[in-house]
Amino acid sequence: MVDFSNQPTMKGFFAPTRFEADVYDCEVIGKVPTELNGAFVRLGGDWFYPPISENDSPFSMDGYINMFRFKNGIVDYKGRWVKTPRFQVDRAAHKQLFGVYRNPFTDDPSVKGLDRSVQNTTPLAFAGKLFTLKEDSLPYEIDCNTLETIGPWNFHGKYKSLTFTAHPKVDPLTGEMICYGYEATGLETNDVFLYTINQKGEVTRELRFKVPYVSMVHDIGLTQKHVIIPVFGFVTSLERLKEGKVHWGWDSTKPAYVGIVPRDGEAKDIRWFKGPERATVHTLNARTEGEKVILEAPIYDSNPFPFFPPIDGSPWDPSKARAYIRRNTFDLSSKDDGFSEEKLFSMNVSDLGRVDDRYLSLPYRYAFTAYADKERPFNEWKAGNLAGRVNNCYGRFDLATGQMSSYFAGETHSLQEVCFVPRKNGSEGEGYIMGVASNYAEMRSELIIADAQRLEQGDIARVILPFRATAQVHGRWVNESELPFA
Amino acid sequence: MNPTMPESSCSMTAPQISRRRLLGALATAASALALVRFEGLFSPTASRKESRRAVISFHQDQPYLDWSGTAVPYYPPPGTRSADVAAHLTEEMLRRICINL
Image 1 (cartoon, each protein chain N blue to C red):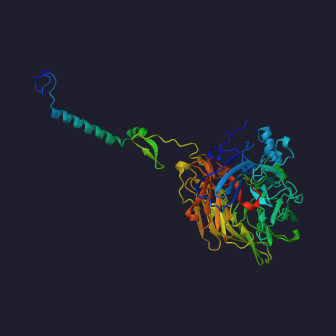
Image 2 (cartoon, rainbow over the protein chains, first blue to last red; image 1 turned 60 degrees about the vertical axis):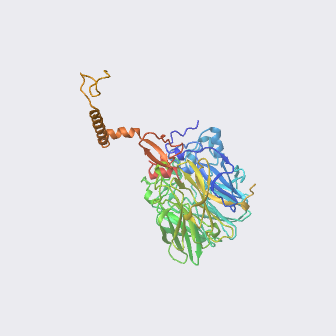
C-alpha cells in the first residue's frame, strides 16, 4: 500500500505526481515561434514509493523523463517514468526496496547486485540516440518518440567505466563528446576514466587517472585544449556506508582541487591546482588563452546540499550555500599550485546556469541562469508564503560588460533551470530562453519561452500544462534533426 | 375611539401625545441609536460583531473584505496557495525537498 501521508513535506505543490501523461496540442498563451522545431526534453525525479529514510537525498527519486514536442507552432507533452530495473522491482514489490543515496548496504537483500540507478539527472541527445544520465551508472537509452526505456548503453562495449557523468560536453567544432565516469571501477574507488566519443558514438580515446580523494566529480570544464576537473569537499568511505549513511558527507577541511589535463594528454600530464573550501557543482564555460586556462562557474563557498551533511556533526550552513558566478584562472606557467578567483557578479544565483552551447569551450559573452529577485512582488495570498525564497527571474549575464537583463515570471511563479535555444545562423545569445515555471496559484506547470535578447519584454509564449510537471533537474533543447523523431 | 373626540386626546386616561411630541421622541431615539452605533465602531466587542458579518470576496482578481455581508464568500480553488506547505520550512528543509526551486 502506498502511503505518503507521513511525509510532511510532500504536500501541496511538492506532493509526488506519480502519473504518466500525454497532452496533445497543449494550451498556449501567446504564440509559439514556428521556427522552434524539435523538443525540450526534461529529466528529473519524483518518489514513486516513499523513501525508506527521511535522511535520504532527493537525488534518490525515481527518474521521470518528459518532453515538450514542438512542431510548427504546436506543442505536445509526454511524460514517462524511466523504467530502470530498480523501478520495475519496486513496482513488483509495491514498495521501496532500495535504501539511501548510493548506499547498497541499506537495500533490501532481495535486490543485491541489481543496478540501483534511478536515472534522474540529465537528458542527452547524441549520435542519433536519446539518453538519460545519472552519474552512478551507465547512460540509459530512451525511445525518443515514446519515451519508453530501452536500457543501459556502453557505446558498443568500448566504454569501460561503470559510471557515466551527468554532464558530458560536446565540442561544437568537432561534434565530439568528452565524457567521463568517476568511481569508475566501483564504489569508493578514486578512479576516473575520461573518454572522447565521436559523432557516430564510437569511443576514440580513453584516459585513466586518479583523483586526490574520492569525491563527487559532477561536472567538468572543456576548452579547445584542456579538460578541467573540479574535486571538492564531498567525501565518502566504506565505513560511512556500512553505518547506513548516504554516500556523501561534507568535509570542510578538504581543499578544493582542480585538475587540468590536455585533451590529447596522458595521466602524467594532469596538473592539480589547490584552493580553499569551495563547491563547483556545475560549470558555465571554459577556455584556454595562451598559458592560462579560465573556468567560469556558479561556485558555492561551501556545501550546497543539506542532505549530504558535514561529517564533523556541525549543522549545515545555509549562508555558505549560495552560488556566485566566479572566474577561476589557472596559470600553467606558474610554479605553484594556486589559482586566482574573481567574483563577477555580486548577487547569488541558481547554479544551474547555461550558455549558448555553440560557444562551449570557446570565448563567449553571455551566461543565463535563474535567480531570486526579492524586490519583485510575490503574491502570498494566491501562492503561499514563499516570498523571497524562490527563483522568480531568469537573467542574462553579460560577462564582457557586467550588465544583466532580466525576465520576471510573475508574482505566483518560481522558475526551474533555464535552457538557451539558439536561432539558426544567429549570433551568440540570439534565440530563446526556455524553462518550466511552477505556478503556485494554479498548481500547474508552464513552459516559458522568451526572446533571449528582450527578456524585459516578458515571455512570448507560455505552454500550459493542466497539472504539475515532475520537477526538473536538467533539461535541454533537441533540434528536429538530432533524433529520429516521428 | 370616539370619532368626535379631538385628535390630541384619544384617551382620557393615557397621557396625551401630540404629533410634534411623537416626531420628537422618534428623532431622539434615532439619534441615540446612531450614537450607540457610532461609539460601537470603536468598541472591541462591537467590532468583532461587525467582522462576523464581513465576507471575503474577490473583485477584479483582488481580495477584499465585503462589510455588507452580501457578497459570496471566497473559497480558494484546489491548488491555490500550493506553496504554502513549504512556507514554514527552514532553508535546510526547503532545500531537502526542492533542489530546483
